[in-house]
Image (tube, rainbow, N blue to C red):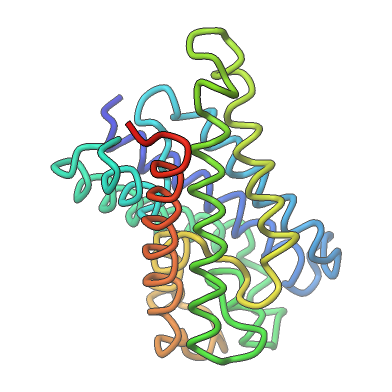
Length: 244
Protein backbone atom coordinates (compact mmCIF):
# COMPACT_ATOMS: atom_id res chain seq x y z
CA UNK A 1 0.00 0.00 0.00
CA UNK A 2 1.29 3.47 -0.84
CA UNK A 3 1.65 6.08 1.93
CA UNK A 4 -1.00 8.18 0.15
CA UNK A 5 -3.54 5.35 0.26
CA UNK A 6 -2.57 4.53 3.84
CA UNK A 7 -3.22 8.10 4.96
CA UNK A 8 -6.54 8.09 3.12
CA UNK A 9 -7.66 4.81 4.69
CA UNK A 10 -6.36 5.72 8.13
CA UNK A 11 -8.16 9.06 8.15
CA UNK A 12 -11.30 7.38 6.83
CA UNK A 13 -11.22 4.89 9.74
CA UNK A 14 -10.62 7.74 12.19
CA UNK A 15 -13.69 9.61 10.93
CA UNK A 16 -15.90 6.50 10.73
CA UNK A 17 -15.26 5.77 14.41
CA UNK A 18 -15.05 9.41 15.56
CA UNK A 19 -18.04 10.88 13.76
CA UNK A 20 -19.76 7.56 14.33
CA UNK A 21 -19.63 7.89 18.11
CA UNK A 22 -21.03 11.42 17.89
CA UNK A 23 -23.89 10.14 15.73
CA UNK A 24 -24.54 7.40 18.26
CA UNK A 25 -24.83 9.93 21.08
CA UNK A 26 -26.75 12.80 19.46
CA UNK A 27 -29.09 11.30 16.85
CA UNK A 28 -32.61 10.37 17.84
CA UNK A 29 -33.54 6.72 18.44
CA UNK A 30 -29.91 5.60 18.46
CA UNK A 31 -29.21 3.03 21.18
CA UNK A 32 -26.44 5.29 22.46
CA UNK A 33 -28.47 8.50 22.50
CA UNK A 34 -27.64 10.91 25.35
CA UNK A 35 -24.78 8.73 26.63
CA UNK A 36 -22.68 11.84 26.97
CA UNK A 37 -19.29 13.47 26.61
CA UNK A 38 -17.32 10.62 28.16
CA UNK A 39 -18.59 8.26 25.46
CA UNK A 40 -17.77 10.77 22.71
CA UNK A 41 -14.21 11.40 23.92
CA UNK A 42 -13.61 7.69 24.45
CA UNK A 43 -14.90 6.86 20.97
CA UNK A 44 -12.62 9.43 19.37
CA UNK A 45 -9.63 8.22 21.39
CA UNK A 46 -10.16 4.59 20.41
CA UNK A 47 -10.78 5.67 16.81
CA UNK A 48 -7.39 7.36 16.73
CA UNK A 49 -5.67 4.31 18.22
CA UNK A 50 -7.31 1.90 15.75
CA UNK A 51 -6.45 4.12 12.78
CA UNK A 52 -2.82 4.44 13.85
CA UNK A 53 -2.53 0.68 14.35
CA UNK A 54 -3.93 0.14 10.85
CA UNK A 55 -1.57 2.37 8.86
CA UNK A 56 1.20 3.55 11.17
CA UNK A 57 3.77 1.14 9.74
CA UNK A 58 3.06 2.34 6.20
CA UNK A 59 2.66 6.12 6.31
CA UNK A 60 3.49 7.04 9.89
CA UNK A 61 -0.25 7.61 10.46
CA UNK A 62 -0.25 11.39 10.53
CA UNK A 63 -4.02 11.42 9.78
CA UNK A 64 -3.95 15.16 10.38
CA UNK A 65 -2.54 18.07 8.33
CA UNK A 66 -1.47 19.78 11.56
CA UNK A 67 0.75 16.79 12.39
CA UNK A 68 2.11 16.63 8.85
CA UNK A 69 2.93 20.35 8.77
CA UNK A 70 4.38 20.27 12.29
CA UNK A 71 6.73 17.41 11.41
CA UNK A 72 7.75 19.11 8.17
CA UNK A 73 8.42 22.39 10.00
CA UNK A 74 11.08 20.74 12.20
CA UNK A 75 12.64 18.61 9.47
CA UNK A 76 11.09 15.28 10.46
CA UNK A 77 9.05 15.00 7.25
CA UNK A 78 9.72 16.01 3.65
CA UNK A 79 7.92 19.15 2.47
CA UNK A 80 7.59 17.57 -0.98
CA UNK A 81 5.24 14.94 0.48
CA UNK A 82 3.04 17.40 2.38
CA UNK A 83 0.52 18.15 -0.43
CA UNK A 84 -0.12 14.45 -1.12
CA UNK A 85 -0.55 13.66 2.58
CA UNK A 86 -2.96 16.54 3.14
CA UNK A 87 -4.98 15.60 0.05
CA UNK A 88 -5.18 11.99 1.24
CA UNK A 89 -6.27 13.08 4.72
CA UNK A 90 -8.97 15.39 3.37
CA UNK A 91 -10.25 12.75 0.96
CA UNK A 92 -10.32 10.07 3.65
CA UNK A 93 -12.23 12.39 5.97
CA UNK A 94 -14.91 13.02 3.36
CA UNK A 95 -15.29 9.31 2.62
CA UNK A 96 -15.41 8.43 6.31
CA UNK A 97 -18.20 10.91 6.99
CA UNK A 98 -20.21 9.57 4.06
CA UNK A 99 -19.89 6.09 5.59
CA UNK A 100 -21.25 7.42 8.90
CA UNK A 101 -24.15 9.05 7.04
CA UNK A 102 -24.98 5.67 5.52
CA UNK A 103 -24.56 3.78 8.80
CA UNK A 104 -27.06 6.06 10.54
CA UNK A 105 -29.28 6.64 7.51
CA UNK A 106 -32.71 6.13 9.19
CA UNK A 107 -31.77 8.39 12.10
CA UNK A 108 -31.33 11.63 10.15
CA UNK A 109 -35.02 11.86 9.43
CA UNK A 110 -35.85 11.07 13.05
CA UNK A 111 -33.67 13.93 14.32
CA UNK A 112 -35.29 17.35 14.07
CA UNK A 113 -32.43 19.42 15.50
CA UNK A 114 -30.21 20.72 12.69
CA UNK A 115 -27.42 21.49 15.17
CA UNK A 116 -27.27 17.87 16.27
CA UNK A 117 -26.95 16.74 12.67
CA UNK A 118 -24.12 19.19 12.04
CA UNK A 119 -22.38 18.10 15.25
CA UNK A 120 -22.00 14.59 13.83
CA UNK A 121 -19.86 15.96 11.02
CA UNK A 122 -17.87 18.87 12.42
CA UNK A 123 -17.17 21.06 15.42
CA UNK A 124 -18.79 24.24 16.68
CA UNK A 125 -18.05 26.43 19.70
CA UNK A 126 -19.98 26.25 22.95
CA UNK A 127 -19.61 30.04 23.20
CA UNK A 128 -19.00 31.70 19.83
CA UNK A 129 -16.04 34.03 20.30
CA UNK A 130 -13.77 33.47 17.29
CA UNK A 131 -10.48 34.81 18.72
CA UNK A 132 -10.77 32.69 21.87
CA UNK A 133 -12.09 29.68 19.93
CA UNK A 134 -8.95 29.99 17.81
CA UNK A 135 -6.77 30.09 20.94
CA UNK A 136 -8.47 26.95 22.28
CA UNK A 137 -7.76 25.06 19.05
CA UNK A 138 -4.15 26.27 19.06
CA UNK A 139 -3.66 25.06 22.63
CA UNK A 140 -5.30 21.68 22.00
CA UNK A 141 -3.24 20.96 18.88
CA UNK A 142 -0.07 22.24 20.53
CA UNK A 143 -0.58 19.60 23.24
CA UNK A 144 -1.41 16.96 20.61
CA UNK A 145 1.73 17.38 18.50
CA UNK A 146 4.02 17.96 21.48
CA UNK A 147 2.55 14.89 23.16
CA UNK A 148 2.86 12.67 20.09
CA UNK A 149 6.51 13.61 19.61
CA UNK A 150 7.32 13.13 23.29
CA UNK A 151 5.43 9.83 23.68
CA UNK A 152 7.03 8.29 20.61
CA UNK A 153 10.51 9.64 21.32
CA UNK A 154 13.35 7.13 21.90
CA UNK A 155 13.53 8.28 25.50
CA UNK A 156 10.06 6.87 26.13
CA UNK A 157 9.61 4.10 23.55
CA UNK A 158 12.86 2.49 22.49
CA UNK A 159 12.98 1.97 18.69
CA UNK A 160 12.79 -1.65 17.54
CA UNK A 161 12.00 -2.82 21.06
CA UNK A 162 8.51 -3.97 20.13
CA UNK A 163 6.99 -1.57 22.65
CA UNK A 164 7.07 1.32 20.17
CA UNK A 165 4.83 -0.53 17.72
CA UNK A 166 2.76 -2.31 20.35
CA UNK A 167 1.96 0.56 22.68
CA UNK A 168 2.63 3.68 20.60
CA UNK A 169 -0.79 3.89 18.91
CA UNK A 170 -2.62 3.13 22.17
CA UNK A 171 -0.73 5.91 23.95
CA UNK A 172 -1.52 8.37 21.15
CA UNK A 173 -5.19 7.47 21.56
CA UNK A 174 -4.84 8.06 25.30
CA UNK A 175 -3.39 11.49 24.55
CA UNK A 176 -6.39 12.38 22.36
CA UNK A 177 -8.72 11.15 25.11
CA UNK A 178 -6.95 13.42 27.60
CA UNK A 179 -7.25 16.43 25.27
CA UNK A 180 -10.94 15.77 24.73
CA UNK A 181 -11.65 15.45 28.44
CA UNK A 182 -9.62 18.50 29.47
CA UNK A 183 -9.76 20.92 26.54
CA UNK A 184 -12.69 19.75 24.41
CA UNK A 185 -15.44 21.75 26.07
CA UNK A 186 -15.04 25.17 24.42
CA UNK A 187 -14.84 24.10 20.75
CA UNK A 188 -15.32 20.34 20.54
CA UNK A 189 -11.54 19.87 20.00
CA UNK A 190 -11.19 19.61 16.24
CA UNK A 191 -7.36 19.63 16.60
CA UNK A 192 -7.29 18.42 12.99
CA UNK A 193 -8.21 20.46 9.88
CA UNK A 194 -9.08 17.34 7.87
CA UNK A 195 -11.30 15.97 10.64
CA UNK A 196 -13.38 19.16 10.52
CA UNK A 197 -13.26 20.41 6.93
CA UNK A 198 -13.78 17.07 5.17
CA UNK A 199 -16.94 16.10 7.09
CA UNK A 200 -18.21 19.70 6.95
CA UNK A 201 -17.93 19.52 3.17
CA UNK A 202 -19.77 16.19 3.21
CA UNK A 203 -22.52 17.74 5.36
CA UNK A 204 -22.85 20.52 2.79
CA UNK A 205 -23.16 18.06 -0.11
CA UNK A 206 -25.16 15.16 1.34
CA UNK A 207 -28.97 15.02 1.04
CA UNK A 208 -29.96 15.25 4.71
CA UNK A 209 -33.48 16.45 5.50
CA UNK A 210 -33.54 19.56 7.65
CA UNK A 211 -29.79 19.71 8.03
CA UNK A 212 -29.51 23.51 8.10
CA UNK A 213 -26.37 25.30 6.99
CA UNK A 214 -22.83 24.01 7.40
CA UNK A 215 -21.60 27.01 9.42
CA UNK A 216 -18.89 28.03 6.98
CA UNK A 217 -18.37 31.29 8.90
CA UNK A 218 -16.74 29.25 11.66
CA UNK A 219 -14.95 26.73 9.42
CA UNK A 220 -11.68 28.69 9.31
CA UNK A 221 -11.12 28.32 13.08
CA UNK A 222 -10.62 24.52 13.13
CA UNK A 223 -8.28 24.89 10.14
CA UNK A 224 -6.07 27.81 11.17
CA UNK A 225 -5.98 26.98 14.89
CA UNK A 226 -4.73 23.40 14.53
CA UNK A 227 -2.14 24.39 11.93
CA UNK A 228 -0.70 27.09 14.20
CA UNK A 229 -0.87 24.80 17.22
CA UNK A 230 0.69 21.86 15.41
CA UNK A 231 3.66 23.83 14.11
CA UNK A 232 4.26 25.57 17.44
CA UNK A 233 3.97 22.27 19.35
CA UNK A 234 6.53 20.66 17.06
CA UNK A 235 8.96 23.55 17.45
CA UNK A 236 8.51 23.54 21.21
CA UNK A 237 9.45 19.86 21.30
CA UNK A 238 12.46 20.41 19.05
CA UNK A 239 13.81 23.38 20.98
CA UNK A 240 13.42 21.91 24.44
CA UNK A 241 13.87 18.16 24.03
CA UNK A 242 15.54 17.63 20.69
CA UNK A 243 17.68 20.69 19.88
CA UNK A 244 20.08 18.84 17.56
